[in-house]
Length: 477
Ligand code: NAD
Ligand code: UDX
Image 1 (cartoon, rainbow, N blue to C red):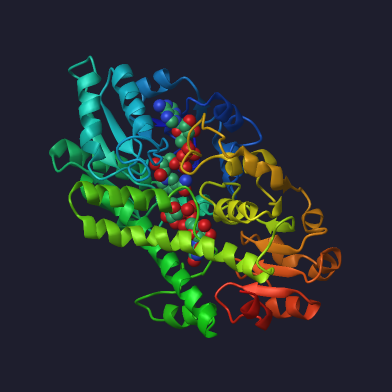
Image 2 (cartoon, rainbow, N blue to C red):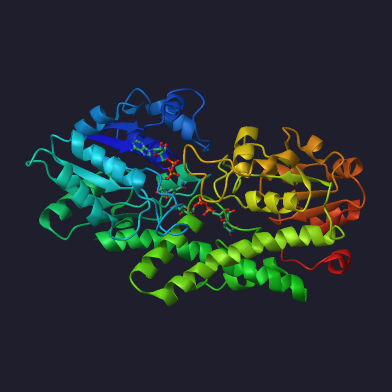
């Protein structure tokens, strides 16, 4: 059997590496239009950072795992074609700012149709609006020259989280496969299930109809993001009342119906999926006339925006209502720890908010490159997922410095803002950092990872998100 995957990104790369590792008899080729990306996949410096990924790629690459730009050849030869291209939010036209932009998906479908001389299973790996399989089916069928070629479309959404992708792929809670309720549809489901059954227990391989599988992915992300917005909403109330959000989260999380996971209050959720997929869900609801349902889910995104804005206001308010000309060290730019990914990271909005008020941000992140940070801070919203986006906000960069050393970032700063929960931040010598900072020195912990009592002992005015406020902060705000 031959598998091709269109899209060598955060999902296509790790997922196919795992398939190749667990199914040595299957040839797996990951193809992409981005030559630089493919070159990196074939080198010792992979295009994405993911713990454990390099070891797997090293073991399989050249054996039964290949990365190539020869899309036509490999897609043409494959029995199963996964499509794992980006599905960003539309920036122009009808549905701008909400709807999923399926340009890349449609391009992939047209390509599959044009090179297919044998029947294929086409697997939706990308997250797509419900009913996409129907549209894609039409594109495939009407563009294939050979009437004997049959396409069976399956929805097989990916639930991996970045930073833990390899573990998630090795031991997933479940794999979901949706297919048509026809004999050939059920046969295709079984063929794909056989691939996963190489390493995943059968009872964890769930099957569903196509629309349920597509919708389950959007729903899973909406529910996960909703938990974070819910606890973040409570974090604001905690600060106003003297309650402690960690204690509240622990107390509710021990209720087995609620569960303890995904209840960490934060400066806001980021990542390429949550916001995009909720907006996509809202758009689908609106298009079928479910205005109230759309409004309900939209509130999850609004609460996230509020949380980022609240953090910025807290920083500015505490620092005597002005950060103009003040250096502020930003610790962490990635959207979460153990990844170099910055897509929709809350750090973008926080930095922009501080810079708009005149602050000079000095940014340190152990994994994110300076070039990426400069790109993110000069791109307008929703543009990050496109190769040639405009940099209309490049004026932001006048007040941005990127440091490769956390001490240099804090040297002469009035405040440190912790925006990503990197483990290394917990080990820093904050006494030494304090000595280098302007007094009063502030720390704003947007992830609640530091030892706040110790920081206060050192002399920092300390803000811990969702926790009782220092008297100084209450007055300042
Ligand atoms: P990505 O941007 O990292 O990768 C997509 C790749 O597809 C890019 O390298 C792009 O060059 C390539 N591509 C686009 N059109 C192509 C074409 N016609 N032919 C060949 N290559 C093409 O995106 P990603 O993070 O891997 O996400 C892919 C999909 O998976 C999205 O729909 C996303 O919502 C979904 N998803 C992402 C995650 C995640 O954690 N990143 C998790 C689950 C699902
Ligand atoms: C998410 C989903 O978890 C995954 O199933 C889906 O396939 C893709 O989208 P990802 O975005 O990679 O994965 O990371 P995730 O761990 O979900 O974190 C998303 C954001 O939420 C991060 O910014 C993270 O810091 C934040 N978060 C997470 C919180 O603020 N609090 C939490 O308790 C958990």
